[in-house]
Image (cartoon, rainbow, N blue to C red; front, side, top):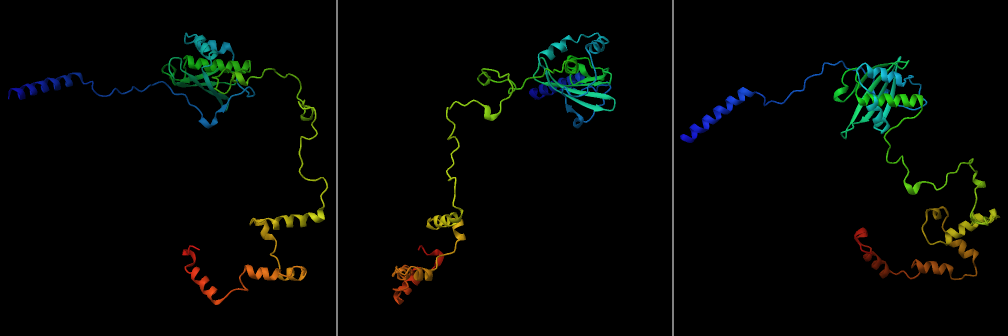
Length: 286
């Protein structure tokens, strides 16, 4: 009884503490009331290159944009020069130019998507980023600065510093020892190490082929071959009557054929023996 009373008293104080604290539920994330940037579909974005007609943004545009928030874009410029920009894509919708960049975080192994909207004249209209400081349509984080620095560099200098892929840089043993700076050479003008180049191409066929006898030669080669090649079935079998009449000097040709087929020596006992041996057909081991 004493133990039960002690346990009930402990539960009573415990429930009282639960009612007093009321902080055991999961913390719900507060919804951000910042306006959201209206973006085009992902299919509308294209990989940016120097041949695209882009808005003429300058360093003055970038500096004036960050000055209104009392920020310095040099942090983003340092990240851009360190090749933190992974991908930069562009979309053209009406008179607006949308740019999407993937920027690596400086202290984490993650990547943020930064969006920039420019006018035709190069004015910065809206900016947004996935990071905590980049919410709303007036983001001024360093990831947005990286995208803006990349745009200014490719528009004015036709250069874009991006993260290098492992295959972009040649390995040391793949680097050429000498760089050829002359005009391209034609194949027949390339230098050869061999002094004589007469017998480079080997032709097993004769230069002159007797076309009339070539067909008969091929037929004889195929018929004399013991293999059952499909091409051999195009020729008809030998005519035993023609062999007997044409080759009169071979007196035993017909007899040899009959002996191979056992037609001359076939008896009733041999017929019955063959019938017993072939009984069962497929199941017969012979």
